[in-house]
Length: 72
Image (cartoon, rainbow, N blue to C red; front, side, top):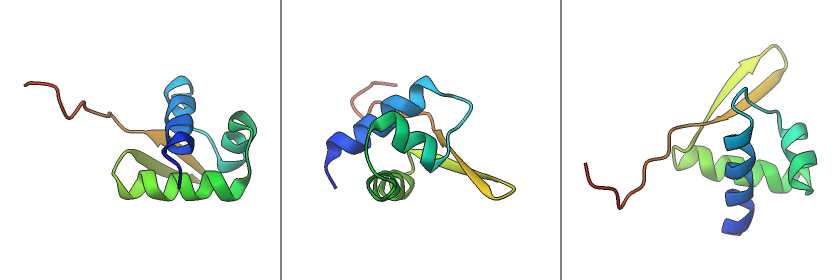
């Protein structure tokens, strides 16, 4: 998966803090459900997003991403 799509999904989720479905993400990203699904799966595996199930829908949220180079 191209990092460009993952970064695009991250940017969209940063702007939409109330969470988005895959359909909403694909519309905002201008790509397919498949591409968004792969990006979300990779981001979930990296611990960068959370998923909340509400009825039949799954809302995707951006977790706090810390800069790996930031000093504590």
